[in-house]
Length: 60
Image 1 (cartoon, rainbow, N blue to C red):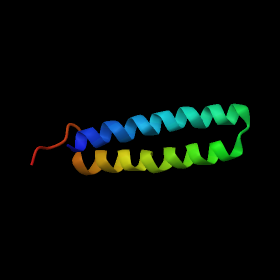
Image 2: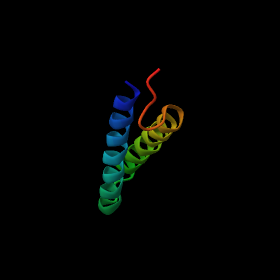
Image 3: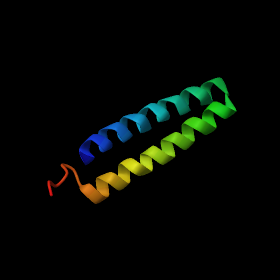
Image 4: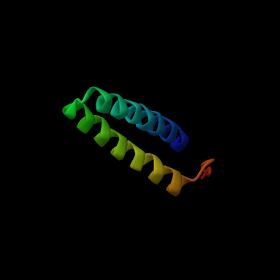
């Protein structure tokens, strides 16, 4: 089931990165802070899951 977390966290991180770029273009400070924070947190979860479980994940 960890591969599902990897996909979900990865998609959230990608969408947050897109939102971060859009808020930078529109000069929205609060939107930038929330999008960048989401990108950092979920990006870290994605990398941590990838490191600990591997890809493709081991079945044990």
